[in-house]
Image (cartoon, rainbow, N blue to C red; front, side, top):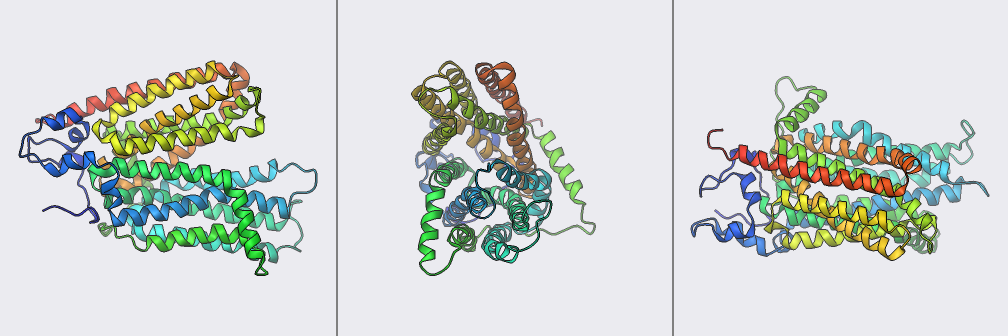
Length: 484
């Protein structure tokens, strides 16, 4: 029976799956190269090889994926513009003349980061127990309502007595930011756990490529045109006599995402609790034990942590790099980060079309080697704007070869009942990986210099790629042993 591309599918754990020809395991299928597919017997499942030449086509024909993807577009755009909205509100309501905005923005960033560290793993546990569609819809609708409530909160607190010399309205912004970030911690693992429910295993790589391309595009658009977009919306809404156009743009984007996700059909299994429902921390422990036992998933997660650590460090080092490049200012470091986003989007698009011809571990090794080489190039060309931009674009392209196959490996090899736990742990680990380098990179650059830090990141990238290639290769041999 051949399933349609729009039909929701579920997958058993990889070790329990086998195709009729030669009892080839799912892990082994992932490792097949283009040449090996040509050598398959004539009675092999032709539907498996055919989509390899279609790229994004099977994914774009999947109505459930289109619903999830379109919801992601609006949700991601709202996420990226949210910080720009907070800066605009601080500037117009709280910042005094000749006062730096850094302290206000730092407080907002802390309020946004705390839930990511505290609730990342816990959210994943509940995602496994709840309907993922309901989580996706509810988190977007609630975030939209919170953002739309900001004008009313600022109006109600405008004459209240300041607390510790800070306006009560600013505390309201901190509270809204904390709640929005908390809901995001539930949305992220639910989103990742939904993809393998609605996309066939062989199409996970292009699906994740589209997701990464969208995420990078929203990052660039959000930071590049977020401010003028908010200003234009505010001007249009002000003609109607209203003064909350900025909040309306961000809040309505979340609500539109929630409405689009109502069209989603996941076909997921209903969670049926045991007589004694395990404690949430027991579920987190189960997720950690699963990562301990499955070396391929564990190592893919480590690769993602390394990747995000490198890019978090780059966000700090880009400021120093822009400072020493003669033709730009330190405040223009965003051009360098945008170049990395463009490279990652381009790499994701290429990977979605041709990446299925290669194994995930080989892509990761090649991407890690490319990242190491470009980081060395960035250490050598710190005084050239154009060469730095080229190196940053290449860095983003090679990073896509690491991040997308590793995310696909985690999705494809994690059983449905464990996905929320694993993605919650992944979300938590990546949030920490994004936070620590922000504090350490600047200190390391001051102590050892920009060149040395770039070279150190290069060494970390290549070691991670080699370890992933070796450990994952060992895992394939074990999983295909008929005696196991």
